Every structure is written in structure tokens, then in C-alpha cells.
Length: 104
Image (cartoon, rainbow, N blue to C red; front, side):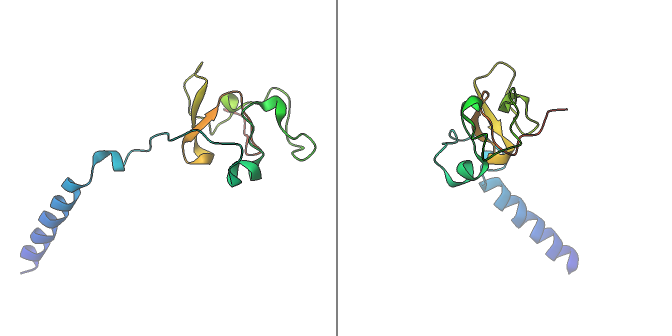
């Protein structure tokens, strides 16, 4: 009996999985992160790193940009790319936020 139940569950699971679009499992970059969003404001995100609030975010160093951050997953030379900190939404390669960590 347990083999029948196990087999039945397997078929049910396969049927359910067949109904879920493959794209539901993929992490695709969404819209661009806006500086006005609460998370962006909390992290001091600016699309232009030169406009980062240096008084508030003392860890900022000139030359740090999203393109050089370990969380940025955009291709080299691209103006915008996905950022892991913002759920793979798009950030400007020339931007900056306080979560910045040097790429290794």
C-alpha cells in the first residue's frame, strides 16, 4: 500500500510542478531601484556614487561604485545590473549604497 501512496504522491507532485511556469523559479532582474524607496534610503543608495551622503555614511570611499561591489551582478560595461541586496533589481553601475563590499 505504501508504494501505491508514494507513487500516487509522486504523480500528483509531478502534475503540480508541470503547471508552474519555469520562470517562477528564475530570479530575473526587475525594475530599477528608485532612490526614494525605503530600503534604498536606509542604505543611502544613490544612482551616482558622487552624490552619496558622505556625512551620514562614513564608510563611503571615492571610487567605490556598484560595478565594483560583490553584490552587483551586472555584466562589465553595462549601465545597469542586478544587485543581490535589492532582490536582483537593477541598480546603476555608477551607483553606491552602504552595503558596498569590494569584489574579490
